[in-house]
Length: 125
Image (cartoon, rainbow, N blue to C red):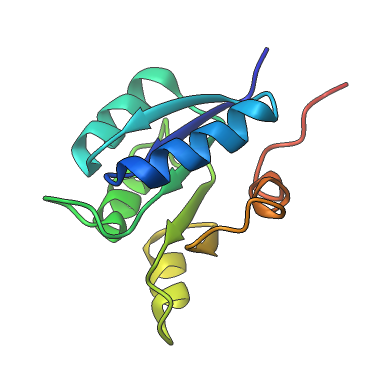
């Protein structure tokens, strides 16, 4: 069974690039373009990993992460912030909101898969 990754991102170009890279590596990608859609989709599909943009319309990624963490069915799913927020303290703020990891945009296509794989649950062989 393919590993399922939910990507919550409102920028079409970022969505395309990440989806292209991850599908090429055999992952199944589900997409949401705003925070509430992402929360609803996560509850429905139970992904193995959530990639979360911080700068989203209506509800920012910090709020999305906090809400995902309050749902017992979703609380254990790793969340990785993928964001252009790269100022001092932004990483800590994302981790404090419930993210397990933090990747700055623009992503590096050569190392991106390795970065997210660190947060995926280990698959039984």
